[in-house]
Amino acid sequence: LAKTTQPISMDSYEGQEVNITCSHNNIATNDYITWYQQFPSQGPRFIIQGYKTKVTNEVASLFIPADRKSSTLSLPRVSLSDTAVYYCLVGDLPASGNTPLVFGKGTRLSVIA
Amino acid sequence: GAVVSQHPSWVICKSGTSVKIECRSLDFQATTMFWYRQFPKQSLMLMATSNEGSKATYEQGVEKDKFLINHASLTLSTLTVTSAHPEDSSFYICSARDSLRVENSPLHFGNGTRLTVT
Image 1: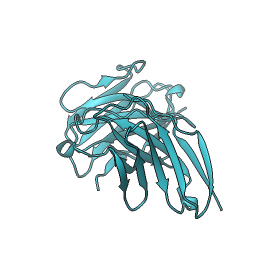
Image 2: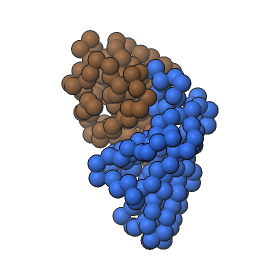
Image 3: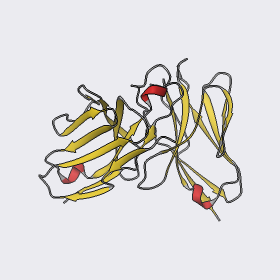
Image 4: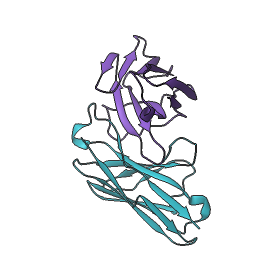
């Protein structure tokens, strides 16, 4: 399973765009990239998932360069409620439903008023 | 969207007793479920993979006789912490993905169970 590296923490002011970059140099051909958000004492919540190029949904965008060795989660106009830990994970999702996701240390985002 | 329900959300038990945690996939089938444990200020650590109708697969360092896993149906997996000790106090989280829609189907997590052993 590919290892991921993220910044330990980030601070941002409300209303700003936040970009969290994750490195996954050993990503395999079948691996997808998935981002989760976790609030204290809650289970992780799925944010976005992608394989290559750009994916956008109602809450975030995910940018993946051609070599797929990194990815960037972009949160537009963050609010105080976006303060959480964000995890980047890679895993072979389509090929086997039996593959777990291995969590790295995540990025603790603090949004300041 | 897919929902994973975990029960109880918190439990306090005395040292030496056993505690059962339930994990249910509410609107999808899950032949495989995963159990994680999270200590304060740390990331999630995979404990075991629960397989419907067969034995669970445990990660290195996780005692299978202490953490009993049963996956008797396509929507229910249980984790029993036997003879609990204070060091077992932690946040336990289960997860599952839709077995019928594996392609691009993300892993969904329950809201966790806070276990405190006194």
